[in-house]
Structure formats: structure tokens, C-alpha cells
Amino acid sequence: MNVKRLTIVGAALAATAAVAYAQLGGYSQANLTSTAEGKTLLNVIGSLKQYYLYPIDEDKLLRGAINGAVGSLNDEFTYYSQPEDNAIDQENLAGNFYGIGVQLIAANADGTGGKIDNVFKTGAAIGAGVQIGDVFVKVDDTEVITSKLNDLVRLVRGKQGTTVTITFARNGKPYTVKMERQPVTIVDVEETILPGNIGYIALNTFYNEKVSQQFRAAVADMKKKNVTKLILDLRDNGGGLLNAGVDVADQFLQSGPIVSLRDRDKKTEVFGKASNQKTDYTGKLVVLVNKNSASASEVVSGALQDENRAQIIGEQTFGKGVAQIPVSLPDGGKVAIVANEWLTPKGRQIHKKGITPDIVVKDTRYTAPLNFAGSGIKAGDKITLTVAGKPVTVTADKDGKFTYTGEAKRPSKSATQGEAVVDLPTDAILRKALEVLK
Image (cartoon, rainbow, N blue to C red; front, side, top):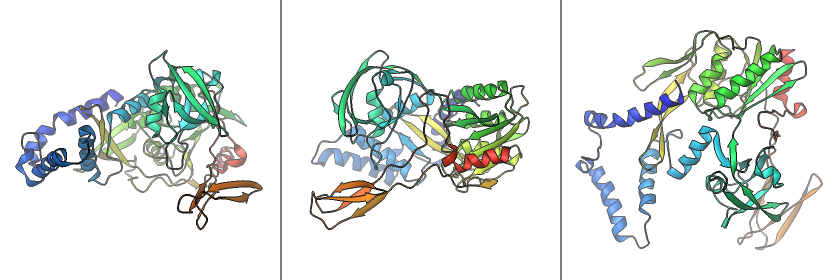
């Protein structure tokens, strides 16, 4: 099943909705006013527009109703994406856009703002002297210190050849650069060779239409280098396209089912089967997972574990064992609807359970960041604590309260896309994998 097929499935769902309404006695545009609840919805919206003291954004009002309908299911994996967010999402899925050549993460503890997590060796940012850790202050004339990350990304990206002026802060000191937006292709597969000619491939996400092609190229590269022992790193990979997960697993399996889907009527259908191909990797294999490995990552690790194709090393995985159908909407948004649960080749359910590794090892790459909170001093007063020989200063708010959350350590990234960086001294899971493969 390819990405286009997934889109067709979504369209088919929307097209058959009217039939379902008639069969199940549900709401439709024609009979929304036939029940008390339908009348109430329209009455509330009309009354708000008629009486509310302040101006109403009607689009925002209706999208609030959409979010309320979806939220009533209490299912974190069924959600509505607004048109603006969906546009960014589609660019990420395509793996192509026009930007400055950086990766961003949130700058603030509440998930807002943005700072540079990596600067690619190709792109405008590296030529402008942008560095990892620089914090976004302004994009053109818009201040973005507390903006939502997607809103910030939307301002940075744009049409090819156009320019964007960004003010960054580095160690608290601002600087401004003007850059031309250039093509950016996201490479989500990274590789390197470890001691003993052991291959290492890290797959960062399955949410990239190019990831299957990139992964096949990495596997082919390993075979050219006569790699007979390989590490597949799926840590922190939250999943993405199910068909991409099937394609990755297929490169290590020669026959049999990879994953099956079961719908609400308990009908089960094999979604993907392995085939014997000359490009398959048949050497020794271990797979690394952690608590953030989810969805398609669990499809791959579950299939390889069931078929005794690889040893799974690391932490219990996240446990997202459901598949969503994306439905494109008239407003340019999207609703992702949980439509199936998936099962491993041996029929294991993973949802809310996860994959248990064959060898359990804690992920030591991350350390808990320093954090503290207190009260009892005057508003605006500063308090300084010495931690590991370094001063940490915080300022009390208007109520005399103060909080501090340090920055969590993140694994290093190469500025060259596709090149993996590892740190054996701090990575217990990777060290165990090397030990197993010796």
C-alpha cells in the first residue's frame, strides 16, 4: 500500500459517509435539525453570533466545534489539524520545502518559541553563521519568542528565492541576518560504520515519503561495505507511514506477514507481506528501541521479533498499536481517524502495551534536567543557587514564586544529513548491541 492509496482510502471514507448516515440514522447536512442535539448546536452558534459582547471569529468558532466533536472521543490519536498546521505537516511528509537549512526545537519549557537544534552544511543558515543553540527572537517584523513552533516554522519557510530576516539571540546577545530561502530535503536515515565493521543505521521517523528510498540506499551502502552485522536504531522514532514501516521490515524478511489490521468488526486482514529480494539484508541484526519508539517503529520491531530475525535491545516501547486514516477536509485541514488496530505476525496486540525487548537496557543518553521551584521572596528579587560549581539565577514573579527548568541533554547530530553521530561512552544500549554482535 503506497501513500496515494492511503489518500484514496481517506477520500473513499468521506464519499461513503452519506450512505452511513442514512443507514445508521446519524447526522447529515439535511437532517441536522431533526434531533435536539443538532438543533442545540446550531442554536448555540447562532446565539453566540447574535449576543456575544466581543467580535467573533466565525472560522475559529466552527473549528472549536470540530475539535469538540473529535475531542469527545477521548482518543489522542484521532485529531483535527487546522489548515495552517496541515500545510506544514504536508511539507514535512513530502520531505521537501524552501527554508534556511536548519532543524528547530522548542525554546521554552511550555513548548513555545524556537531554537536551532542543527545547522545543515548546505543551506543559507550555515553561510550566515547561524549556530546550534541560537534562539529565535524575530522573523521579519514578527516577534516569535513565545510563538507556537508551527507558527514560527510557517514564517521561516516560504517560496524559493525569497528572503527572510531573522533576529537570533546567542548567549543572550541578539544578532540579525538576512537569508534567501533555498530547497531543503529532509534526510531521516543516518548511517555510519562502527568498530569491527559493524553497520549502524538510525531511522529518525517514518513520517517522510522519501524514507523508504533513503533506507534502501543505506542498506545498499552497508552491503557494498561488506557489513555482515548491522544495528538498526529506532529510538525516539514516533512512527509515521505504516507502509514505510512495512517496507523497512521487508528488507530483513524473505516471507510471511509483517503486520495485520483489525477493524471495529474484528475483521482482520494482512496489510503487508515480506518478499524475497536480492536487495534484502540477510546478515546478523539487532534493533534498538526506547520508550519513545512508537507506531511504525513497533510494527518493524514486532515483526522482526516474532520472526526471530533480530534481537530487540533497549526499553519497553511506547505502545501505539492503532492505524489512522487521514481524511482531507474542505477547509484545507485534516482529520486523522483511528480506524484499525494492528497485530504482529503472531497476532500480538501492541496498543497500550508496547514491545518488550529481548534484552532490557535503560537509555542513558538522556539525563534528567535540573529543576526547582520555591516561593517566599519579594517580587523581582533574584535568588542564586550553585549547582556543580556553576551559579543558577532565577527571578521571582509578582507573587514571589520562582521556578527553574534546566535544558535536557540531547544526542549530538551531524551537520551532514545522512551521517550518524554516536557517543559510545554515554550510550548503554548501543554498547550492549555491540557486545551482542561480537
